[in-house]
Image (cartoon, rainbow, N blue to C red; front, side, top):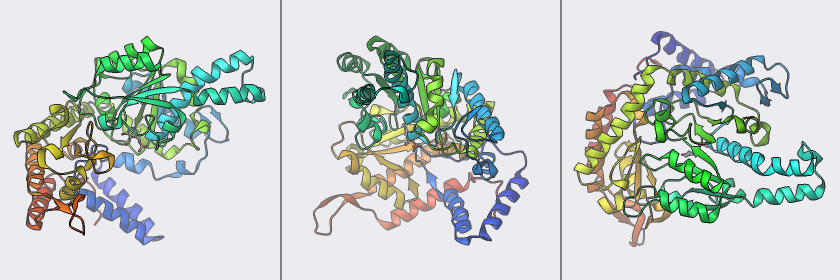
Length: 484
Ligand SMILES: Cc1ncc(COP(=O)(O)O)c(C=O)c1O
């Protein structure tokens, strides 16, 4: 791993001791924790949204900060005795502001979903609630008449959002019906150009003009290219929308200064949300960055939509953000993208079709239906059987729908943390290609064609599993941790 801690033997002792203490109370949990690191060490992990947090980040989460209630925010808590939590939250926010060049940072969200909810309600509070309070001549919703309150509640439900379609790589939390955001907003999606697979900004502009959304959401879970946030802001300004960017997936590339200028969302969007556990390599959690105009509303995230903060996780965010401010993190972020490009080249050279023809970021989307005659579900299972962990994903206009899908999403943040480089990526491309060219669609129990079942010669699965585990064995995960 690139960021070895200064005291490897101390790290080993710390984790060993923690497991010993846990084993004394509930051995099954100690075993599960130990087994998890053993499993992770063996896996060829290509899940684009996962990573390996540093020992310092992990150790920061197991302590007394966890016991403290601290609703509210720094200096404005609903509980007494929060001075240490104030320190933790301030340091996390300071690192986030400095790292991303943001005017304001809010480190409380427990996850990406929560960060998005905080952002939506901050914008609704600014653009719908505040004018209603002003019209009524009051400062607080509790002071509205029943009639004004009913009108405001209706106004909340009448707002529009424009977000990236799921099959183009958008996320459920960007206004889709199964998520609360889809129940809150009248949503319309923008997509990609069917010919190139790239974002079609002019179609987006036309849609925004016609739909007049309150919020335009940019950001993705499965789009392998750059997004031009300058153009997105220009479109948002033209129609009077607030631009919100969900950089959950690529925050590490922004932190590592691989995405700069038009491709860095922070200078362009009024509000930016992220997770902290994906390419940013921190603890599981979320964060919101915003300009000054939204700062007060964002800080009301708890108790608006969040339960009490998790101070131990905010502390771990501060540690991970401090790590991301080190020069090594820039090398890491660049290596993530170099590896992703090498994987793309290796796959294409072997005949695979990639959505958009390649990648500019940490992920690739293989069109396994066109390339190998498989559904995403079949390909995902065949790869897993062969020791390669990926996940299926819809592709634009997916003929197999959102469940079976036609795509496999592969990302490089985790393997890059282990130290694998472009030569290993080419070898991984060979392994993936071998599995997928050998696998075939299977049948149901009654012999009908199945989108779920696959057939793969067990000898091939064994051979590839061995090669995959030999490959990662050369790049030990947490080499400084010996659990004995
Ligand atoms: C773009 C995007 N936003 C939000 C989320 C939600 O993050 P979490 O799982 O932490 O709630 C994800 C996670 O998959 C994501 O990819």
